[in-house]
Amino acid sequence: MKKIKLAIADDHEKFRKAIIRTIQLEKDLEVIIEAENGADLLKQLKIKIPDIILMDIRMPIMNGIEATDEIKEHYPHLKVIAYSQYDLESNIIEMYAHGVKSFIGKEDELEELFKAIRTVSDGGAYMTSHSAQLIQNYLKDAPVKKECPYQLTELEKYLIKGISNGLTSIQLSEKIYKSHRTVEKYIAVLYKKFGVSSKVQLTKVSAEWNMKDW
Image 1 (cartoon, rainbow, N blue to C red):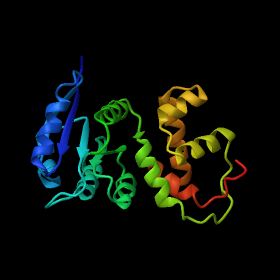
Image 2 (cartoon, rainbow, N blue to C red):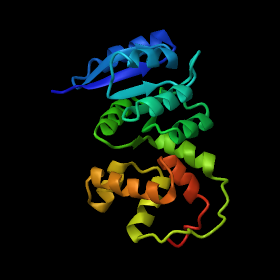
Image 3 (tube, rainbow, N blue to C red):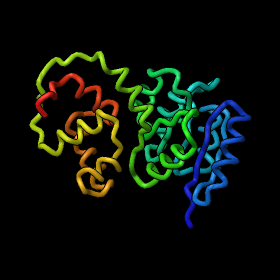
């Protein structure tokens, strides 16, 4: 079995060690980099490359947002999952805006983390119901300003509404009877059409539209 190689960046040593021990019990997961901050992570990436990075946000020297930007510039193929606290909605929004594939709270069940890792490894994106709700709360005051300026198919409208309601690619694929890889391709087309690069950015853009009749 080919293992999914992981890096974890977190400045809390006891938590970091504990989560690594738990991850290593999963037969298909392997932690190959353990870093105490973003700068330490970038230094180690020069030596070995994981498949996925689990990134804390608030860290000394270089935080998770800064580190994610550096990774996206120098290692664009690397996938980042934010693994931090749910305490600041703005942090969740910002990490998604900077291109992470998922936000998992340290308060979530470990099964959520494992689902996210495996979904992201398989090319998808994963959003917990908690993070989806926080995003909706953050965006709920966005005013409806205009009609959507794009010609959209009924499928595209359905996908946008589903994404805005926090559905994952897998959940959407089950609803439209397509593979989640196909759904990811549809979503990539939407990103290109709207000039965005994440589900959160798409949600923010679509929050300005009148979708009542969709």
